[in-house]
Image: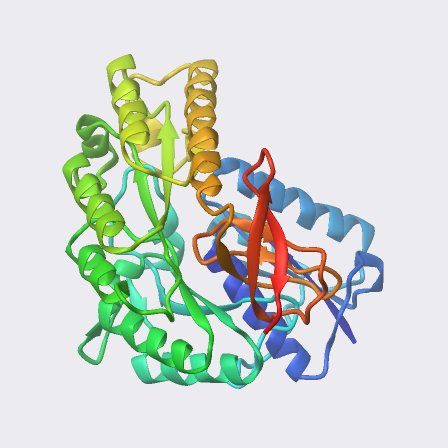
Length: 394
C-alpha cells in the first residue's frame, strides 16, 4: 500500500506531516511520489490565508475528480464548513503515532514543542483551528531529540505555533533550548529555533543561546510592522522598542548572528508615515533575512473588517520596496563569510549543499552523505546570497 502526502502552510504543518509520514512508514506503508501510484492521499491543509485555503480546496477537488475510488484524509488547519463539505465520501485511515518513528525524506528533523496560541492578533485565524497553547511534556522532547540524533540527524528544528508560550513541568523555552543544545553539542549536532516573538521570554532565550555551540546562530522575529500604531491595531502585544531591544541584545551577545523577520505591508489604515517607519526599522536593524508580504484579508478575522483598506497595488508596491532593501542587506551579511569556515547540514548525497547555522544557503561540489554536519571554507558568493566553497575534510 502506498500513501501520498500533500502539505500546505507553515513550518509547523510541515513538521506534523513529516512525523505522520514516518508513522505510516513504520506501519508498513510506502511513500508514493506520484498521485497515480497512491492508494491513499493525506492532505494537510491551511486556512491561514484565503489563498492557501483555495489552493487546498482545488487540490482536494482535483484528487476527488481524477481518483474517485481513492480515499483522502484531510488534516491541518481548515475551516469546519470546508471539512463538512469535503468529507462526504472520504475515508480517513488512522495510523497511530509512535515516538520512535523518525522522518526519512528530510535532512533535518523537526521537533514540535508546542501547539496552539493564546494570542488575539487581529489578522490571525490560527487560534480558531489549533486552540489555546498546549506544550509537549519536557521529558518527551528530550527523549525525541535523542532518538533523532540516534537516527543520524545532525540538525533538529524546534517548532511551535508560538514557542514563547512553551511551559512544561516548570520548564520554559529558555530551559528547553539550553537542555536541547547540551544534548546536541554532546553528539556533534545542533538545534535551530523557530520564530520567536519579542518579549521577556525571547530575551531570556537569547541569553540561553549565548556560548552554546549546540544551537544555531539564528533568530527569527515576527516583527510585522515598524509602526506602534499599526502594531496596536494588529494586537501584537509588543512595541517597536521591544523589537529593537531583542534584536540589539541578540546581535550584541551572539557574534555573526543571522537575524530574520516577517514584515507585512498594507494593513488597514497603514499610512505612508507608518510604512516609512517599517522601512526605517528594516534599515537600522541588521536583519539578514526578511519575509515580506502584503496584507491579505482573511474572512473571519477582525482585521478583514477594519476601516481604511489599502489598495492592493499600494500593498504590493510597498512590499516590493521592502523586499529590495532586504535583499541587499542579506547579500551584505553573506559577504562577511567569504574567507571563513561555515558548518552545513548536507541535504543530498550527490553534492554537499544546505543551510549554515546563520541560515545562509551554502554549496560545494564535493559529495558527502546526506544529513552530515560538515565544514565548508567559503570562497565565493552568488547574487542571491548563496555561498559556495570547498569542503574541509573531517
